[in-house]
Amino acid sequence: MDAEAKIMTISREIPPGITRRAQFFIGAHGHWAARADIKQYRDQWMERGVPKAQIDRVSTYEAVWGGLVLPPAPHYDGGPRTLSGDVPEGPDPDWHFWAGDQRTALPYAFMIGPRGEFGLHAGAWTPLHAGIEGWVEALALADHARRCARTVTTLTGDEVDGLDLDGFEAVSEVAGLADTWWRGTDSLIAVYRGEAEVMNAPQCRTATIYSGLDAWGLRGLNT
Picture 1 (cartoon, rainbow, N blue to C red):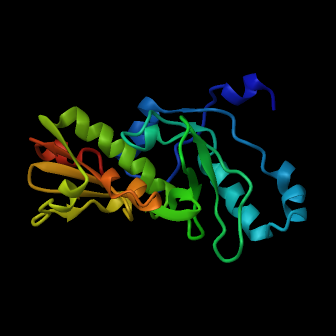
Picture 2 (cartoon, helix red, strand yellow):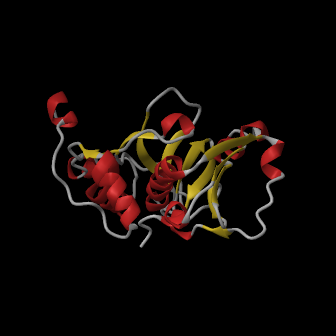
Picture 3 (spheres, rainbow, N blue to C red):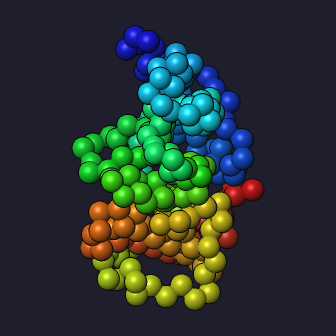
């Protein structure tokens, strides 16, 4: 595949199973580049001992998400530049595969875990969301909250553990694991613990509080 084909913007359907807010975010702020042809690597990967089932996982990921380019995330130096699968890495049962290239030099990779989780891998494995859908939902929610909030406050390190989340509900669509979102009566809170866990660096804990939200700001197109 030549360089022009890799960056060519093409028309693709928005993946199913995400909220209207995330659909709008992809349609308004994302674009599609050409997806990789996993079939051409299948025999090579199987010769290297990669099970067929794991190659099928990469093929499915690439068919749905491969080539999607989204705006930078608020953390993790922007997240993957382009969602794209690559050769799975074992051993059993903890197979992972590449989720997309980093935008900047980072001490970890973005990967899809053995149960479909999206997360960070640096020798250790830290899942951020239960699926790539959760990562995309979190990006869409951050963009929405930033636009609607009257004030935005950032906490770091031990301040994050001092957050009082009584009266808040977990935002289910982000399928949070290390990273979670919480909805209150007039605010949204995003808690990022992924870097802290994968690098054993508690000072990297971060929370962003989006305050002064009305009913639309709290939810938007979340159905």
